[in-house]
Length: 477
Image (cartoon, rainbow, N blue to C red; front, side, top):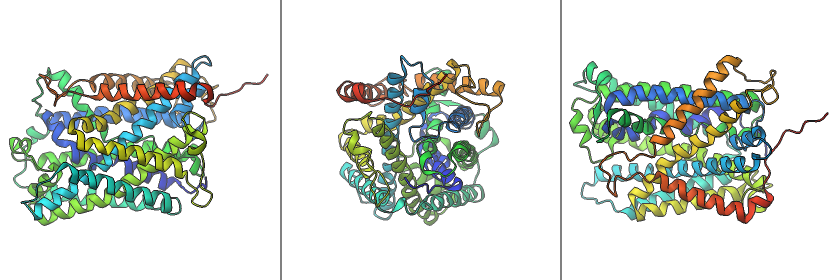
């Protein structure tokens, strides 16, 4: 494929997907229930440190092995020969499905934003599930068309999206800081811990980190776009690290602005409408301003979803190129004129469209699919990082002359943290958010993981077991 993504555009693409401050805005109500302001702010520091360690660990590997396969190619190279096929295949399926889940999480946002605008102007309007379903499917279809027909030739789309989200961040944050009145106390913002989950405080804090982890989802986008960048050995590591750094600064600042704008904590917890809209209405003291930000949010989602579908299609294409998927011969093809893997884009869209059916079936099932993206992605990061430690950070696999490298002592610390903290998070992200557990409050992440394991296993035995082989380093005497 044509190398059309420069270093700045690569950073824009990664940050557009994470869009940390906007993700925090959409999910802050959950974090406030599961621990309150202290969990939101201090939890963000912990998860940012874990994701920065992941970005640095992946960056080192990408500077040596810049391929669209990303973490599953790293696993194939680092794993013992006896296990490399099975482990790398597992990592690839986890990464691929995590991007499907991220896509579903993004498309559902306009299906909440647009009805919020409609109900503001028409309070008598009653939202039905099929309304949200149609918005979900229509928005996805529009973005897929743009992905197929225009995005490859207009990579600066990501730069426009990045500029849009930064402008939106500045307007929203300054608006909340300046306009909100009365403001919350310093004690409330920095020391309040509120546990409404039924779990002990420690468990409550750890399960609540799902919110502050979700705002960094998608940091591996640069890995899967590496083969479309002129200088991937430097631009890919820079993009991943920059996305986490910019994401933390914007999300932490915006989180503080939100908390200081909350004068009545109990009132916020009782909000039944679309929380970002309601917080902006109260904090900005302007309905028109809140509506304007909501419309801008819909536009911003267009840029986010474009980056997500582009990245998801590239890892699907990489898996097909390695003969890991049924119909790999079809999915690996690049359209000669459009210069994109059209079949891979369409199959990603088809799976996302099918996920939309869960909106009609069950809110609980769809929410489980959305939240599973974090667990699936963390598992795909743990595997290559653990194998780097298994290989003792050998210069055979991480040569000293690599374009991006950490001092060896720092690399050990960062790699260990990138394995240990995400492993802990994956365990607690399987816990129900509230106890006692009901059918509505049950955490169905484990069910999603089971479904992923089922389809991955079926595909392995029906096709990949005989055809798949990831890359290997061959040593010559």
